[in-house]
Amino acid sequence: MKTKLLVRKSTARCVDSPAQLEQMLLSGDWLLASPPPKARGKNAWRMRNLRRDRRLAGWQSLYLWLTPEQAAVVEAAKWGNETYVDLLIRLITERSLLQ
Image (tube, rainbow, N blue to C red; front, side, top):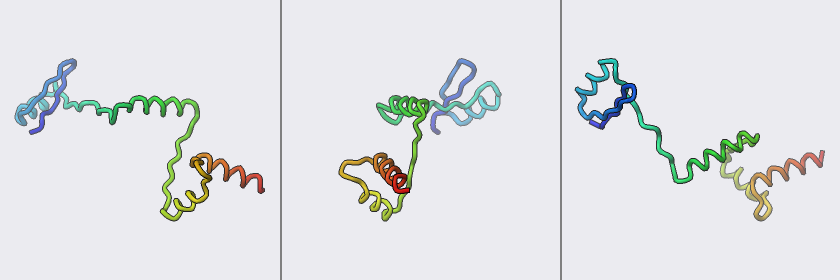
């Protein structure tokens, strides 16, 4: 059996025995706890802080799913080292100037 972490108020205890685990849980004094998730990488906290700061500053995150054909069209529309954001802004600006 995989070790389970049980907590009671400010006490924590690891239990390996299924019988002991069941007995402690049935007593009502103990709760099964799960450890906090581990960070995904060295800079995970930096990435979380950056996303939080950008959200607070009003930034928006957009995710797009494109078919391979659509992705090829978008890639062909880019100029040199133009980013997708620059491409989007350029196309919207050009369209509004034409109308």
